[in-house]
Amino acid sequence: MLVILRENVENLGNTGDLVKVTDGYARNFLLPRKLVVMADEKNVAAIEHNKRLLEKKRIAQRADSEALAKKLEQFSCTISRKVGDQDRIFGSVSVGDIAAALKAGGYSVDKRAVSLDAPIKTLGVHTVTIKLQPEVSTSLKVWVVKEE
Image (cartoon, rainbow, N blue to C red; front, side, top):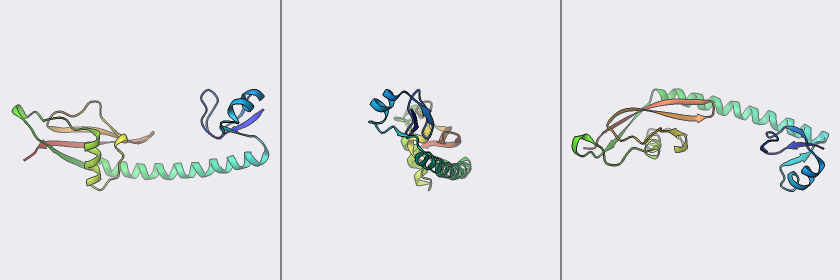
């Protein structure tokens, strides 16, 4: 039976793929969960149209992400923290703090896009990776300074 995938199905394919599966698998598992539609001329044409629309949207989002990445490369944010003896900061600087500093700087970046290997626990300049899309990422300089 030929079907068109409406969602990504593990070990079968991605959204919009035309795949051949057994009748029982399609009838008992895929169709009741609305993971596939039957492959007829009308559905194939609709899926092709949706693929073209999604590709245009993906290209536009990638262009926006690349423009934002270029702006973020030239931006640096400063985060102030209380320090104790020997200039050790209390607590740490987390991805939420960096996302808040970016928002205060006028950039809307989700905190899940900020990537830290480990929380920042020292004063100074640190480089942080921001992954805007799977294929678009940039680095950002974060200054951690003493709170006055």
